[in-house]
Image (cartoon, rainbow, N blue to C red; front, side):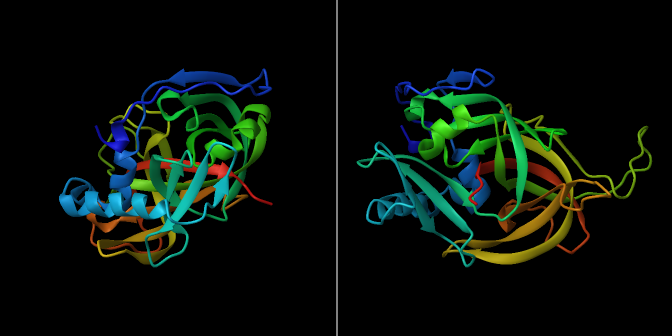
Length: 274
């Protein structure tokens, strides 16, 4: 049984929970698709890709933690030519519990939590956060720092969120004027995924504001792009996030500024540092 599908029995910590926040426990959830978004799904499914991830997990046990608590450590393992794109590896200080892509970002927005979905099979130290941004739009994300900041998530309903995304599929979006509902040229949006029934996965139409090509160590290349997902004339950064897309998972050969793209993404986030 592999890391991404392993089930572990967890336990609840005694935390003074905010009564406005609902806590739900589930015994499933994994990062296989998320790792595929990072290194490419072909690599995920071949020996080279699996060896790459296993080597990173083994290496993580030899380096200092980025964040730690009495029970857990989060290790940040560099994997690319851009220092913002890494793999975060969660350990209980003895064994690797989990590994997932991590795209550090300076983008922040005010967030309000409605529900926390804890993964009991990972010792209740990973979670998806259900809520909304800017008191305006619904938004759910995987908390990359939950193991360390669990008490903050459960106690504080409102906080500043650093939000980014990993794309699983990217294609050029072409306007179809023959449909019954015609959208404007500036239309962008995201909606819960029709293919992956999890809270943090979304189908999207976005506009590329800027991008940078990056390489994944000894594997392939991709882009870190700034992608607008909500139009707001008064605030161009209302919801404009950093998104990583591996070229292997793209149905187009390259990006251009101003290009409209569509696809499937995974939102991740953490409590913003001051």
